[in-house]
Image 1 (cartoon, rainbow, N blue to C red):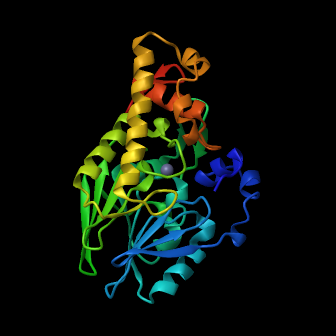
Image 2: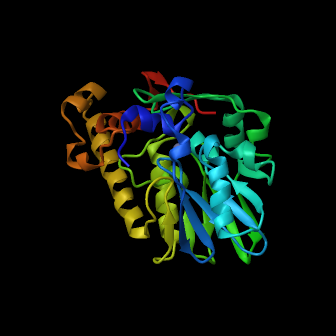
Amino acid sequence: MRKPAILFACLLFSCSLAATQDVDFSKVQMKVTKVAGNVYMLEAADAGNIGALVGDDGIVVIDDQYAPLAEKIQAALKSITYQPVRFIINTHYHDDHTGSNAYFQKQAPVIAHDNVRKRLESGGVAGNGSSVRFDAKPQPKEALPIITFDHDVTIHLNGEDIHALYFPAGHTDGDAIIFFPKSNVVHMGDDFGTYGFPFIDIDAGGNINGMISALETVIAQLPPDVKVIPGHGHISSVDDMRVFLEMLKETRAVVQNALNQGQTLEQMKQAKILDPWKKYSGDFISDEAYLETLYNSLTGQKNGKFIKHN
Ligand SMILES: [Zn+2]
């Protein structure tokens, strides 16, 4: 799943028409995997992973990838069950997780945290506060979640209590993690991924501290044999999340230490202070981009300016 930076960046967010034309969505394959209990995962290239709880009461869908993939998602769901879609939950506002909202909202309501609706409606900038930066276009009314929550919501269907719980200021300022206690599955949204250093949307209120505390809170609550659907990447275990969390904490500590010594961002880049974690450096989030993310998170800076959180 290594791709040229421009392509992956483009796949993650609304990108220019010219760049979109580089991606031939007609060739994208939708892979369906049974995770555990009544929960399935739908994967397509670098799009966000979809979770689907199925049963006699209908389908609850977690995230819906890109708009051009909507019919493929629908066909994949039909390959599992003929029951209708009952609800869609968005884990956050990025368009590789919300792109088919307008398509599916003709069938069932979309549910998300208040800030997801706000950001989809207003559009704005997504980025790490420095070199990673994308435009997030305002979305039409049909794509906006019609049910929103400020802390958590539970859906009782198919004998399952699907719990969407808000975690502030992690990957974005509107992250929900979705628990399926009976099936013993959790969908982490983009607070956990297996593609290397994480993207943290500082421009949309994200912060390394929130991502770490979300992971600590969730890991402490999960049964040891739970199956984990990451926002991107392969089905994982709690131990995989622990390894990821340790990397986040160690790298945060190294940058905090450098800050305490009065080092500038440039000096940290020169000193390659994240070199011991080089294996996490990817085409999308390089070690330098992640260093900027940590620096901006810990200093409250964004392009040298103080971040005003809403
Ligand atoms: Zn995301």
